[in-house]
Length: 344
Image (cartoon, rainbow, N blue to C red; front, side, top):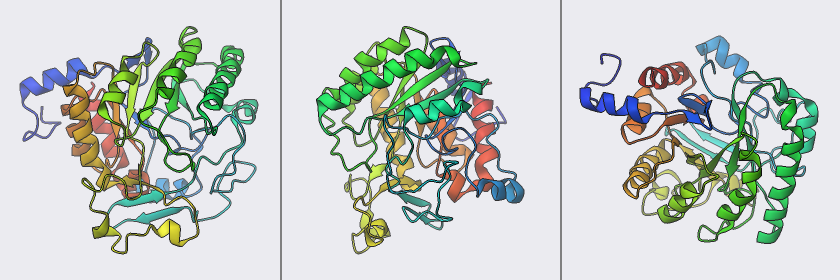
């Protein structure tokens, strides 16, 4: 018990947490802490600045389940030009705004990438030996075209799955705010996409649905109840200016304009970092209140070990880290250790 915050966990809570924190999805152990999609780039190679984090702070992703940067079906330029090695061409990408003091990140990357076939042809995913997730999102214009893209994606993955050395999962991104598409949180598109993804669960590929705290809890419950959905991943970024009753945007952006808009981007960006944490905690509690029983991977604004403890206390099965790598890189290792100790 000394490993945890005594003021948060008593003995009974500790026993309850050990019972609830299953990390198995379709008998695949994905571990107690995942990376947010893209935090380690497409193949786990990370980004050029990560080598400096290792040297300065000994920042390590050891013990973190790899989740790929979200890919689309076809190549997409997005707002972050990439070189042949899929590294950002800009040393400091202009589509990302960082406020270290306030613990805020805005990004309008908009799913830059070469497309799923290009990524599979590189062969790096197939060489991995530990379970991981490939994140995918359709950016088609119409609901019908979205489903067509998901069908094509499923067909591609079915043909390629036998080449993988390890079991893996698909993380269905349902909530990126930076693609220029209005996300209808009331439509049945997520459920229809999951219907199609059942073609992958039948061959042992796990599926997690990545949602945002902007999504109505009732819709999240429907998604979690779908037989193809093995887990909920909470939360994606929150679109700039959204949820004004929960985020004091004026406090951090007095003129009400996103720094990314000022830089000329059409999308004002999605918010991650410290301001997201309380929203995730509250939303997680609501998911449990309405009866979500599927495993929930919760993250957003995790900047210190006790943030992880708080999420597990509220019923998370695993946690995920992202913005901490930029905002508090010296704290990554301690956060990872906390997640593993809680699940020990």
